[in-house]
Amino acid sequence: MMRLSCIKSRLLNGTAVLGLDIGYSIVKLVELRKRNGNAEIRNYLFSDFDYNSSVPRSKQAEELVKGLLRENHIKTRKVVTAISNEDLIERVFYLPLSSRDKIKDIVKWEVKKHINFPMEEAVYSYITRETEEAEKLCIYLAISKRDVVERQIELLSRVGLEPLAIETKSTALNRLIQWSHADRAKETKIALVDIGSKSSVFVLIDKGFIRMSKYIEIGSIDITSTIVNLIHCSEKDAEELKMNIGIKEEVMNNRDSSPESLDFNIYSAIEFQMDRLISEIKRALMFYFAQFEWEGDPDIMYITGGASRIPNITKFLSRKLSMEVEVLDPVDKFKCADCLDKGSATHLSIAFGLALREVCK
Image 1 (cartoon, rainbow, N blue to C red):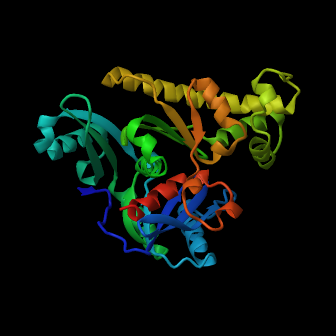
Image 2: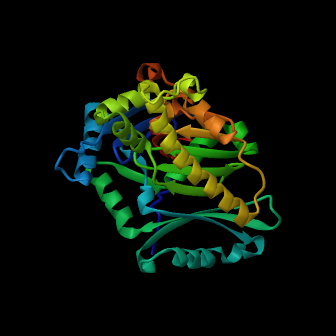
Image 3: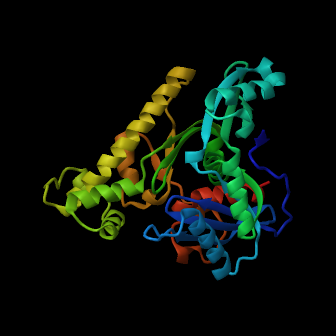
């Protein structure tokens, strides 16, 4: 048995660290530096997978990381990365405060409940937090398989990187929100959705602690595919239409509802897939509220990931959810001389959150 890889360290002032997020369609890399107690951006980069290539995906990922390091002259070698949600089991459960002395044994028993492979192949880690509910501990538990972690470490070794930690995308997103919106995060219930290419991560955070994390198999690619089917265009054209036209206010306000309208068809494709995502989020919240008797909807939802750049997506989701919705763009909160030239980095939020693990210690 082993724990999720974690090497305790403390970066010196001026030292840089990498956050590496290998997604379904993009490899994302962020380089942050610790300076005078603050986090500064040195670089943020990404590179797309080629799905027409016969090269295995793992080999492509290796070559893409090597290329980003080499072509951008990145010398930093210490890195924090994340396990794919497809290879992860995340659970949140509660215990009486009196169980604190037995927490290790209880967690081990909890791990056994949720895996369908031998315990000796399990890799897990957990975080505990005393809640405001009377005499309760809240435990966030993450489980993966040993060989998944070992493959991740081997990939990092082959590209010449030194892993400081391998953690979950949910913890990276939570860290980013705690760092970028510290005052609000300490006092409010926050819903956070990272809409990736193939899937999304929904995280429910209460006063800085993860109360729920859900992997949802709906992503930006689903919107693109729906556009292709509706207007019979190429995937490349559909992607451009999604990001350039997006959600037109005239359509959202029912001033343009012609089936022959391009704007209407783009809106319909986005609405169809976003309604599916919203249904999964609502179902998860209802289950959580019923199971743990947790009162009150989240105060705000932050969205990030590539689909968060779709025009008017926040207005659309706010109307659908009857909730304040904002885009979480990490670049807005960092000191960076040339970030304006690089544009939005919402699709790199997880990579930023990973790098912050070391920089903000």
